[in-house]
Length: 591
Image (cartoon, rainbow, N blue to C red; front, side):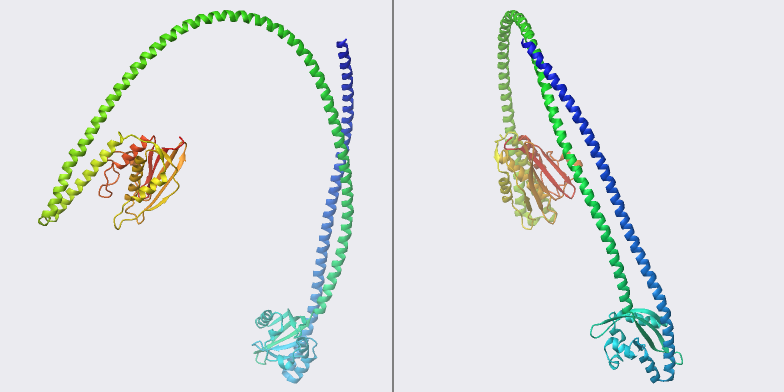
């Protein structure tokens, strides 16, 4: 009965699923139609936008053509007017100049009447640029009387005096100028734009007496040209406003189409959401049916697995019982073998302890012999050295006057070398003691230790006092007395090998690398050639002569031995005559 009910539910679910598939296909078809309509509207919009772009380009082109045509007409009109004016002016000027020239020859009074008869400003100018005569028109255009104008510089009455003087020079260079544009200023501020025509006038023998100039007022002509240009500009603005109105209407149409498109897109978006929701519901229902079928299959499989497991468990139980019996026999045998192995290990440990005791006794014997040798060297070798040095001093103090310069030099050499031998023995003893000295490890305040070494330095009078640049030095683990000796040797070397430099600069710093702190000391002294680096830390190995820099050749060997006893490393980098940098590493306090 339950199985029949389950079957009916599956049939109903299948029908519902089929119905949803049909609905989904209908919605998909509607969505395809809507997408096609949206694509059609997009194409229409693009076409309309392209038409608007073409219309705008056409309008711009027409405006440009109109402006070009207007400019050509203005230029043509100006050219025509200019040519007509030129002809008229040339005729008038030729007549006036001819009449004026004749009148000058006849009488000054007759010349005066001709000048006053002209409505245009006329002026005669001396070779020095001074006004010699003017007519009434010149008086009116400047607002200054004839008496005051005569004798003044003609260029003072123009807005551009320098340009006026340049025109005057051209008259003398070429004999005349035509239509030279200038602006005359009235004393009340009024400006009059004129075109000057001028030529030189001469006496009967051909000598230049001055310049005769006539000015043509072109203010009214320019005002008329400006009026015509303004009318053309008003016409063009009206055309632009008409075209702008057409563009506004086209933009409104485009905006309406965009709004319609957005509304259609919103409808399509809602339809898509509805379709997605129905698909999700359908998929959920299908998933529930699949889960139900899987659950039924799983239950059947579980029953079969449980039965198989029971069979395997019985077999496993029988097998485990057999294995327990075998394991019990193996454990009895293993216990016997373990007991034999423990006896063997006990015997090996006893033999090893005996060997350690014997080796320790041998090392103690060797250390005692080394101590005896050091003591013997300390006393047996020092006594003759002290005797040599002492007797040499007695000879110098008691019999120094009896020796010549060579004898005194030999005695001083004996004392110097005996002192050097003593220093060498001291350094050898210090080097040998390092192998026996126990290293007491503690936390070292490296900044305080370096400052202490610096304070203990002694300098002779006239010797360069070094300038130290000490950066932050992190603490490290080690034997403080031994590490102090390392700093003493390194700082002393840096000072010694910088003594021939004008200034002694020493830089001390540090940086961390893994579980080590790397300290360095850098100088700008003599340096050394890195090809001899392998000799640097050897006993009695020196890279500079004794005469150049004093020393025993053991200081760097002591540094290396101390650093190695701290499980560290020491190395150097150098350039000849540029300086040296020594590095050494120590464990950090947390390592």
